[in-house]
Image (cartoon, rainbow, N blue to C red; front, top):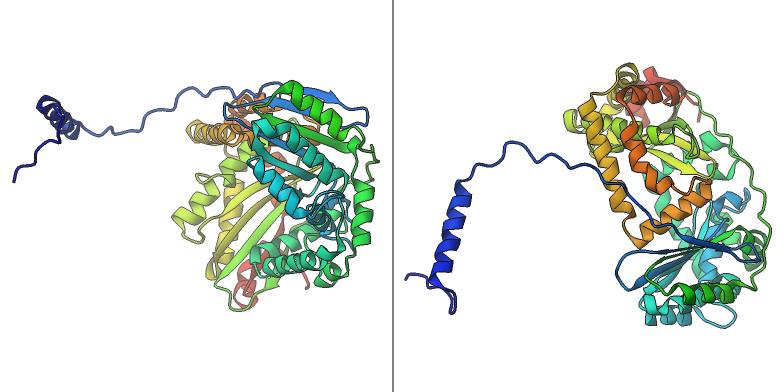
Length: 468
């Protein structure tokens, strides 16, 4: 039976469509993908900034065309302010803050935020703690009041403490079962020693010993308007939002920023083996301290990192993943904290190729230090960085993160708008210069979690093996 066109479809249109399909099928497939266009500048609208009498700094940015707004209060407190016997106390403090205020239960907070079309979360990081979320634009001023209540009037209900400590204990157990986390813990301990940045995980005994009074003391010592920023990004009524901010936070005490010891990371070429008998893979983490975002060379360092190991098309990835098949997803990174950063290469490699993987990683470092990359290779990396930068920051959350990043590190206000230009200004010669200047592979701390009896002889050529 011959197929008939559906009712109402003119026969001429059907014939034309068939002819078009036929011609398209005959057209040759282009031998090369289209060339990328000229990269466009990334522009963040200048925020409206003002400061309350108690020192709270506020930045508001109109962004996008969806009727939503993101509100986040960022307090300069977090894991960096924990004492040696207080690891994860910042996390516990944040979790307990979310369990209710003097006038709202945890359920009431959740229901109120949900009625505004969103949710409210509290999260502690290395250097800051954030309180906030995203709601429909019309509820922005009310959400500001809710955020203020959570941060200013936490009830810290003791009844919730056992459950929250059980959650932390479970998270700890899961983390310590993962070789990547075990390697990170050792790596940070070696680099930072007794500094808070070197304390990745608490003990279970530490968690179980925490009290509500310790949480209250940590809150009183580290929370305050004088070292906090409030960010508002999205669509909102500027006058109504500013009025809500001033009313909600006017009575919050200024507080005093507690002293935090400056990190003094150090690294020497030593291998730390953590035995994992029978492991089919070895987890490698190697790195060393490097420059942080306030350095003039920092953007060039990120370009060098992406070319060396930080992108899927990077040299180390191409070598030990695509060509050798030693690993599935290696990556390098510049890991940043307040006034601090380190460069690290991460890879889970097959056990029998642990030594060979180290050899190839160091060979790629040496090659980049000796010879500038081809301009075409560098251009591909620059296009990748520019594209991901725009994608990551073309949202309310992305813009807010950039504002927070600029404020935490004391960067110029135009940093988000100049990053792409700086990326494209890096030359092949600079990439090699940066690699020689900052990639101190002869000082690399090397942590390997794997089957010691199989890998020890493989890795001996790459450094002294530390006593365990």
